[in-house]
Length: 492
Image 1: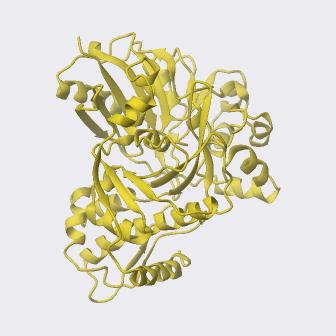
Image 2: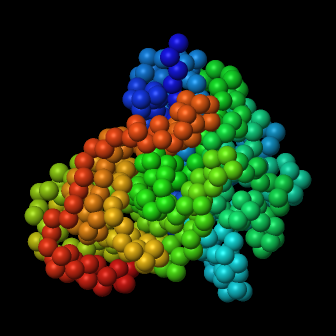
Image 3: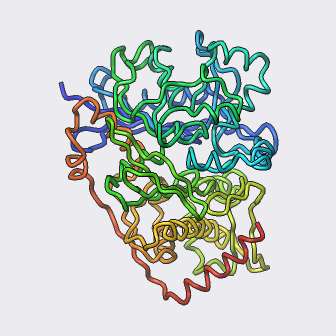
């Protein structure tokens, strides 16, 4: 019987499952969206049951499309939206509340209060992160403070905290495994980058009891086995976990220090492999764990833009200008340029390198001649402008320019966006043949743990390129575009 790897990519707006073989041929993939919940301005939540249903549906559809059964799955890798936070009952698995999504800004005041009393430096030094509502620590503190009896249950060990990876492993294993990996733990404001363990000083500041936290593991090991999770049979090893952006870095085969990638998903995320030592930024970037294999740890610098594909969804769902996200490229190509329009996608604040949670989106330069084509083009360009700001900060921290950038995620299939991005950055963009690199990274981690792939070199040899993009605009024109962007983003 031929055996395959199942990768589960649990994202912000939906779940994708794919099955692939040893030669990286994708037998099938399927996606299932679920609703976004906005109970108050600035609040973003997910129903954990909807997440779980989307995972189950995506797996069922993928197995059906691949014409295989669960018995042919050798191992499972999981990658997930990071920072999204939830609590569930240790005995029943029932969530205590909706998951608080990474985009949620409800803890902005708590973060500001922690900064005001001088705590930001200890968090930055020990976790590589900034005190921002983006991260899990203050979200967990909010849940413990606002849910009846939650703190008491947490102190007694009766409830479990987890990012989505922890929740899925718990559910897939029938409640037998409460774990996370170093990449997800490094996004919580609670893990020490040096010890790779929960930091008692930071837990004390946040008011988090250790009893609620999962065990921190590497990215490639057997965490548990499937148990009571249809349509999968019992006994499949769950052997790979990584946060989505670290998984994409791994899926892009960026195994060497100095290699970088950018993922275009709901948000945009640029990661740079910095090797076996953490590099701390002076330009608003984050220091994070990229992955851990055995006892070997790899770190990364990261810059994030909170809104990328979500801006396209806004055009679709909020304004009704397009029927599907794929239509935006054709709409943008109905005009020769942006018609003087600049769009700043600060719909949930600005991320790196600005870190302004209070910022909001701007459409600047509207005239009587502005059309929906101009707006579509400006939205795509706004995504690219944000990434330029991140890359510029990254190059300052490195004190040298990057030679290239690997791109992935759904929007990397948009040739207009990729070409404009290459024009702004002035570096070569390389798009892989398989742009589902987030799921691919999860599959690699799981496959390495069970010997499906013997080593990193075998993975690198399998990686295939699709297309390269290089700068096509005069540098003077690019400078003018960037100057206009800078003047508008300051008003967001």
